[in-house]
Image (tube, rainbow, N blue to C red; front, side, top):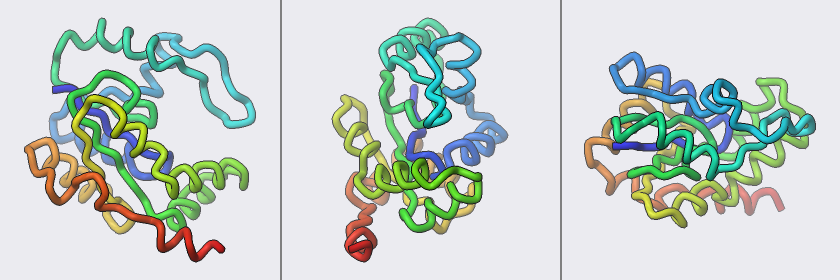
Length: 175
C-alpha cells in the first residue's frame, strides 16, 4: 500500500512521520526526495519553497517504489498516485501560532491559515481517486497523531471520515 500523509504546513506531518519511521514504517519525506532527485522547476523566494510539477514527482516516485509499501510525507503527497490519503488538520488559530513560532512572516502564515480554514488540501484529496481520511491534530501529541495514522492504515476509517473536521465556527469569528 502506498499512502500519503498530507496537510497544510504545521499540521504535524514530519513529526508524525519520524515516529512512524521509528515504528518500522517505510517513510519518504517528499521535500527531501524532490531535492535529492532535482525534481523542482525553480525556487520561489517569496514563499521559501520549491516549485514542483506533481506529474514529474509522481513519475519519479513510481520508478522508485515499484509497489513497495510506503508512507509519503509532505504537503504535495496528495497530488501523486496513492491508495490512501491521510489529511492532517489543525485549528487555524493554533496553526497560526505554530507557523509564527517557526519565524514565518505574516503573509506566509496568513496564506497557510486560510488554506487550512478553506479545506484546500482536503478538497484536492477528495478530488483524487484515493480513499481519504482526516485527522484533527490540534490537541494531539505527535505520538497520538502517529497512533491515529496507524489506526487509519489498519482500516479504522469511520472516526476519521471526510467531514469530521470543521473550522467554519472559528472562521466566522474572524468577521
